Image (cartoon, rainbow, N blue to C red; front, side, top):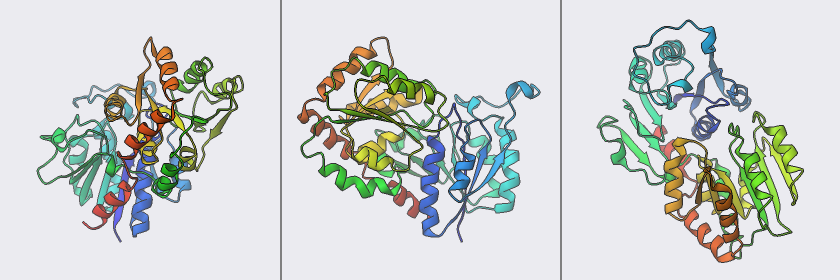
Length: 367
């Protein structure tokens, strides 16, 4: 039996996207007959129990708050996202080695902006092949397979960053989406034949650390939405601003529901006419379903995605700048017109068909 270990983290700062896309790939590989395990650090909002609830074994690495640890000067080169790890790469590798030496996986899959060639090389005795899931193209790897699911990404972006033998898979056609998105694609595209703005979906990720959801709801109160429009907000149970969002929703001029930890996101997206969401990995879910979107840039690592989506006509990018409220009102006004909704839906649908997890799963399993 093919044995696979994932190294990925979630937290109130990192968000949930890395773990969630790894879970999608794990589900695909499990259905093919693989045995999957996870290694995660116990950050606040780690999702470790959620992963276990999905039936996977999780090896938890202890999180020691910085103030509780002894300050030891590090000689490691500092990556842009080093603070996301909760330890040095060397220490993380030592902790992971204990798990990997026992499991000896066929594939180690790492999805973490704070890990690079140093960590990967230290663990080489304990895995047969390595896959890296990345979005940034900003550090060196020694992997056999690399996935970057971003629109506009090119293989050349990883020139000099991966070995010559590495297989590189880029673009959202390899995006790791749960199977229900592909299953609902035809239904979703068909219902947009005569689009009207009746149902607005707001989803800023499971955590939404900057509280963008409340900012959007407040801004929406001054928008000229149709009187019969309704709004659905989706959040994770660990979102720190959940109570404030719920209170804000009760003040909206339109019926506004706040849903928590739902398991039917694909259906919710398929039944929506316009989405306002973060410019992260959920962008590919919306594209698969042809859902017109306004994407908010909530972090620097989302700028590339938002720019490419906007350029392709698959979404309208919005930065939380001084002038963003007026721009939001203007964008929503544009989507009163059915022809604008239809045009963006068609452009979005061309970006991603939802079968990426199956494509990558088959590649891994056959090697």
